[in-house]
Image (cartoon, rainbow, N blue to C red; front, side, top):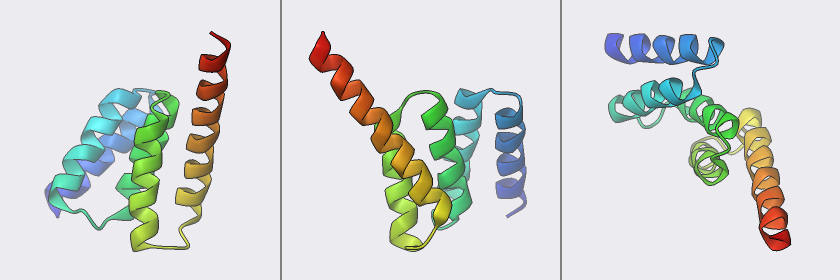
Length: 95
């Protein structure tokens, strides 16, 4: 649990600095230690949204909602992911 806490804190620090790729990597390491901790999934989803990786963000939010079906952050970030995917689809249609 100490390693998990340290990795999560490092991920949070990267988010504060706007280093979303590095933060996502730290949260991914956390998940190897604990797959049930929802906050690392919603945090990584935030990173993926910032990196325009909408499918990955949606997947993380779906995972959280299977564990906690009323997680507000997961609902909100999944909605943002869907919005990003829709915008991308419209843009592709115009090309």
